[in-house]
Image 1 (cartoon, helix red, strand yellow):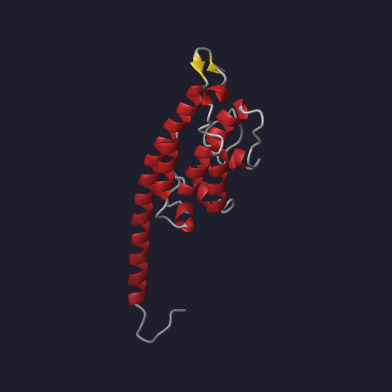
Image 2 (cartoon, rainbow, N blue to C red):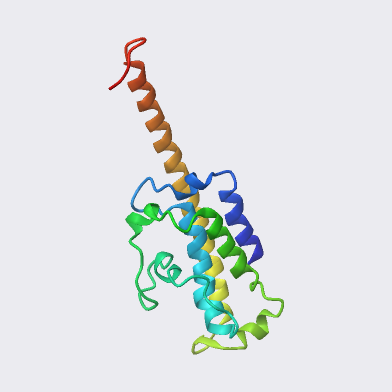
Length: 173
């Protein structure tokens, strides 16, 4: 759990808050959204279900960071995830820290209490499912970052080309 969560932060570390919010194509959610979504998964499917003292971080997160879990409720549309300006990256990281303070729980076996997700499947499967989902998010983040860099390089080249066509000493209007 801890190693996979740390890897997510390592992927995001070289990026600015603005980079983490960028969405260069409709099918690739921003890094900030992925950081929050995987946190939402553990909050929703582990802590809310098995930690009696746990209170959800923010009610709006249930919609903002739900990807495709229709039984849980509504989802924010994937093509518009780059338009989510609040919470900012700092608040998303604080959200992660708040959820991570519970997991890995020093007594994870007691936290999960032998409850069953489905008959025959121990609740630990929820934690493992969340870790597996987060590893998948790492791949998506790496691909999204590559696409964003290509898009930014193309945009910068277009700007330089356009600026090169401005007459010397002239102004663009």
